[in-house]
Structure formats: C-alpha cells, structure tokens
Image (cartoon, rainbow, N blue to C red):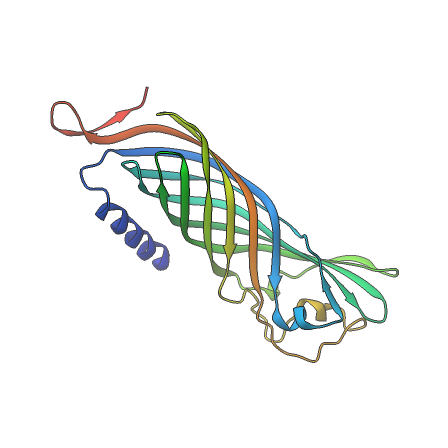
Length: 245
C-alpha cells in the first residue's frame, strides 16, 4: 500500500505540473483485452528438452477512474483481474504437455498521454496479488490438474503500458482500441529451486537451480469511457464541478 500511495502521488505531481489552469475531465471506464503471454525462465528456454508454445492465452478485464487535465495529460486508477499462462512440452521418457495458468488481482495508477487526433499512450505499475495457480499435465498415461499456488509469490509488481487510438471521441463518450503489454522485472516464484518443468521428475530432471521466472503479456485491448463531469473555472470566475449533459 505504501508503494501505491507514493507512486500515485508521484504520477499526480507530474500531471499537475503539466496541467495548471486546465479543465479537468472526470471519467469512469470499463476495459478488457485478450492476447498471449509467456513465463520467461532462461534455463528452460535454453534447454533442448523443453519446447515453449508460440501462443499461451492471456486476458484481463476491469475498470478505472480517470482524471484528464486539459487535452494531453492525465492520471487513472485501475482495478482489474488478470490471467497469464504458459503452454510447453517436456521431452523426457514420454512427451508431456504442461499448461500453467496464474490468476491475479491488480490495481495501480497510470500516467496517460493523449493527442487531439486520438492517439494515446499510458504507462504505470500494477500492484498484483496472486489468486491461484494451476498446472495441468497431459501425456499418454496421465491427465491431471494440480494446485501450485504455494509455489508463486503472493504479491509482485507489473509494469503495464498501452498504446493505440480513439476511433470514437465525444465530450461524454470515448472508445479506445490498442495494444497492452505487461512485464514483471521481479521473479514471481517464491519457492527456492522450483522450476515448472521439474514438476514431474519422472519425465524430466533439470540440472539447473535458477528458479527466476518473469511473466510477460501482449494483448489487444478495448476500453469504453464515460466522461461524466468536469472541474474548472466557470463563467462566474469561480472553480466548480459540473456534470456533463
């Protein structure tokens, strides 16, 4: 929570420094996206016995509260549910297909930059809490799903960024379509020596002990925004909050 407060204050300070004497637009948004993800473990990627899939499903959905100071700079506070996964094959005594799926709850402040033509860019941290992690193993002789929640860190931080365009822009409603990415610079594995391919030692016994695993995501994203009010100087010269019609 301290990191969230400090980061929010920093982003808010930056936006305010660029937006003095500007109208502040206040909004609520619903957003979501779908794409691919990867659990990056360098020794596993370099091992010839492990074959990573080119596609592993990933998605997020949630909402956020936004403040736009003028036309170019703003800040938003996002709350979302997120899912990251990894498909891969382990070539051992038998061919073993592994599918690990991790579900999280995330929240965080984001810096938003926009242009009058509809281009947008956003970046900021998402503070992540692990909900659950499950590993499904499939081969000619087994088909089982096991809980692996205790193997992963209960909390970590993602760096989230987005880029795209706004095909719909009015004073009350906006639509954003773009690309969203996320990456954790810290390892999400909490159990020393734990590596996902080592879950079934009958098929594969790794000779390394580097358990560092970093999740990455790349998704297509859609956001619908309702701009319900604004704060600024009225015709009478006083600052006031006004609802949009």
